[in-house]
Image (cartoon, rainbow, N blue to C red; front, side, top):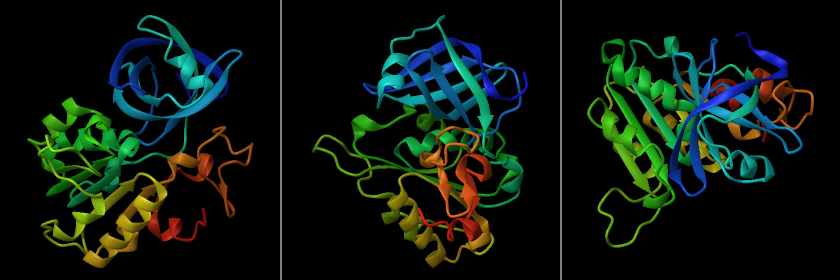
Length: 264
């Protein structure tokens, strides 16, 4: 199936995975090329459509991790395995794993920002011979907000992992604190040659990039995603415009050399 730029196509829900009360992953039928970090427009007639990042890629399927935040996603959450949704896309440039092969890799992700980089993490979790040392620093608001728990348990065996929460009660015994707290202590081979991906809320991305630069990372070795700016998918509505760039078309993934000039 080719990318459907304007016309939605019907896609079957193959599986539904609950993470939290407001965040589910829907595995959707899809035949075609797609990259981590790209997104689809998911729609339901009479309710509208919403841009959703690809959180997983398998033969004949894509995963879409959806947060219940409005009338469209409210209606999506009423659908179950075997039901169908309309989709168009994929849109955006996405992450290309070829950019990171042979390199030391650091991925910093906050909250639902794990979704668009999940495919990259999965790839290098399996293909460890195609990269050098790898660090994943992922942060969530609380232990109850953690997504992809099974994946984190698997990734822990194949890379250096720090899974942290902003705050927790006395029963939680894992790392606590913002992701930026842990960047200065990462044991890196050579920061000037290492590559990094940063995805999450704007403030988290800004301070994470600052911390990476202070560690010696080069600007041209840092990728960020403005996936929160996505809207219509084709740059026509103007919602995604930052300066003279349209995130839906030119992004949502940008090298920091370009992203630093985008005033959001």
